[in-house]
Every structure is written in C-alpha cells, then in structure tokens.
Image (cartoon, rainbow, N blue to C red; front, side):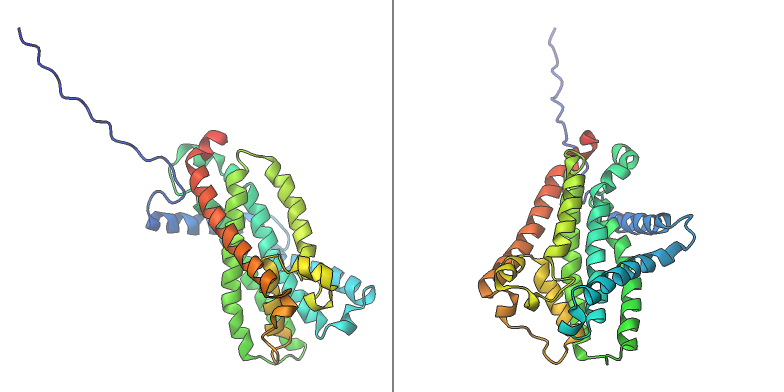
Length: 284
C-alpha cells in the first residue's frame, strides 16, 4: 500500500512589534490619543490645572533672574537679560521635561506594551508632543513678556521656526534613546537626571556664550544645543546682528563637531530604537 506524503507546510514569518509596526495611520491616531490623554492626566486634580504648565517655568525664571541680576550682575552685562533668560528657560524646559518624562514612558505603559502590538515609537513621541503643547503655551507668555519689555517685532522672529524644528528633532532623538534603553537598564533614569542637570549649565541658557572665558567656551561650543540657543538668543534680543561669527560659537571646527554630534545622536536614536523595539516587552 503506497504511502502518500503530505506536502511540507511552509511557515510564514510573523512580524513582531517594531518601532513603527502597524501602519502610519494607526501610528498617528495612537500618537494623538496618548498625547492628549497624557496632557490631561498630568494636571488632573491640581488646583491650577493647565496653568501649572505656565507657572513652573515662570517660577524658575523668577528665582534665576533674582540670582543672576543681583549676585552675578548679568543685567549690566547682557542687553535685555530678563527677556534673554525667560526665552532660554522656556526652550530648555521643553527639552528637559520631554526627555525626563520619556525615560520611563514605555515602562509606564507596560500593560499596553505587553498585550498589544502597536508602533512602539508612539510612546516617546507622544511624550514629546505633550511637552510641545506646554511649549506653545509658554511661548505665548514669553512673547507677551517680550512685547511688554518694549522690544519691537522683527523679521528674525520668523527664523525661530526652523530653530524650534531642529530642537524638536533633537529632543525626540534623545527621548527615543533613553526610553528604549530604560526597560533593560534601569540606571538610565538616574544617569539621565544627573546628565540633564549638567547639560542645563553646559548650555548657554543662563548666560550668553560670549561672556564665558575662551577655554570654557571651547568646551561649551561642542554641545549640540549651544548653536541652537545662541541663534535663538540673537534673533530675539539682538535682531540687528542676527548672524554670529564662527568665533563666537567656538570656531568653525567646534561648530562642525557640534553639528556632527547632533547628526550622530539622531542616527543613534533611530538605530537603537529599531533594535530595542521588538524586545521591549520581554524586558518589562
């Protein structure tokens, strides 16, 4: 009796969860839902509600303004120093809050990550989008303060749009890195909190880079955030001289290194998140 051999069954590879798995439309829908939900949940139950998103940077501004105008006498050294300081604090608060909140964002959505296949990139990107809402509110207050100080609008203000885009991209890249590494390496949370504080003082937020000694300026100029803040400061407070020379940014070599580090961070963010996305649920 002849034995009939059954045809071999070909197994089809099933794609696991990835950084952008599930389609672009679904990713955008989830991004909107998570960002809006997180924004509402952040201030739920507080007395001031959404006003806290404006009050926090203003309180920080008030304390630092008091210190740096009366102790370090920066008001006499820097034209329109209150405007300079408030605008810088608003921008850096966006970067610091987004990256700090992104550290534990994926772990915070552990139940969803374990049970649902969806684009993992949505989670850190939603955090950045939530803080972007806060940035928009704070910029309205900042520009109202600028006008109240008697600074007339200038065409250089339009140049802030590409600066904000560049800052948004860098913030997203750092958020992707810390959120992807944290599920496997929980020390990332502590390390980043310390590093973010150091970066606050290593970025020309409280001071213009030109008042720093040459040796220290050469080090600060390597910071990818330094050119971003330097240009934003000039376009707001010094519109008559909007283009700084390369020497004020540490020289062309250090400026090129800062730009290269910016690109490297963005490239590393894409690589590490694509590598870690399929195994995030296992690390939780």
